[in-house]
Length: 140
Image (tube, rainbow, N blue to C red):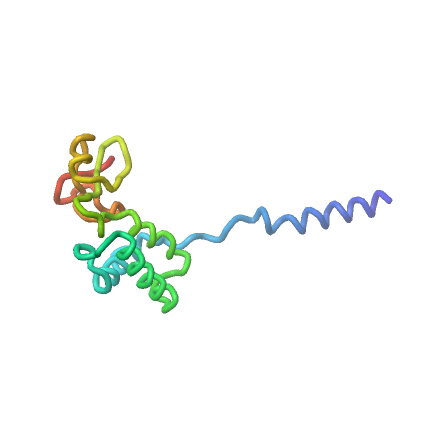
């Protein structure tokens, strides 16, 4: 009986191992950012988008096409979509707002200034507040 209990215990542990094994390594999506931004810029005009939803929808179609075509890892689709969702494209008088003590946010230009922020160098929070940006805005 004790032998059967040991076998059952070992089988239970072996069956549970894949659940604890951890997820396989995620791809480095930041390496794809420039290519994806370029492809989206060719297909979707940030400056003339009627509204933010229209711009994000267009960007989503481009990102989905790149992922299904193999030029973007499918695991990076969500990360790339967040880049375009967190942008000022299609938002009137909005800027990416860079503040030293907070992450980048999309705000009205007047609100950003009132909060002590500086407009980012690009309309995308993903790279608007990087050190050495042309506007001088960055987050440590």
